[in-house]
Length: 199
Ligand SMILES: [Fe+2]
Image (cartoon, rainbow, N blue to C red):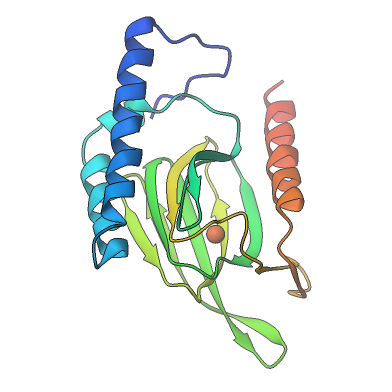
């Protein structure tokens, strides 16, 4: 996937097309939430969107991190840009999630609770074009092992930012309250490390 730097400009045609197409994706997800199997319908929307190259083409280059496309009490849509060679500590969501990779790679490691700690419980490496559902009780860590950015649309069946949940220290696996600021800091420091390697 060609990745535009944040300094690149979009033409008027690019912008018009981008808005139309992204509005389509968001509105299709919102409509899918009215279905009885909303998670399944969201999955179908994402599969259709990523099955053509137009999804990747429609997405502007954003800063690494969690970029919010839509948020309400029962649906959150994020465009997540993962810095190269970046690993995010284990965390849960406490709501279903649908992951859709439109560029690069996203390696998931799963965990389950054991006694008062966590144990590893398999993994799933996702590549461009993949759509993966995660149940509400999933605990995972995510890694971009590549040397380029990964782009992914993540859709959650709730308000991703309002629900109380947990994260675990990457080394000790000690449980802590989920802290969005620590997530943002992790993205920023990984992006800085990448940029300093480039200079
Ligand atoms: Fe996650």
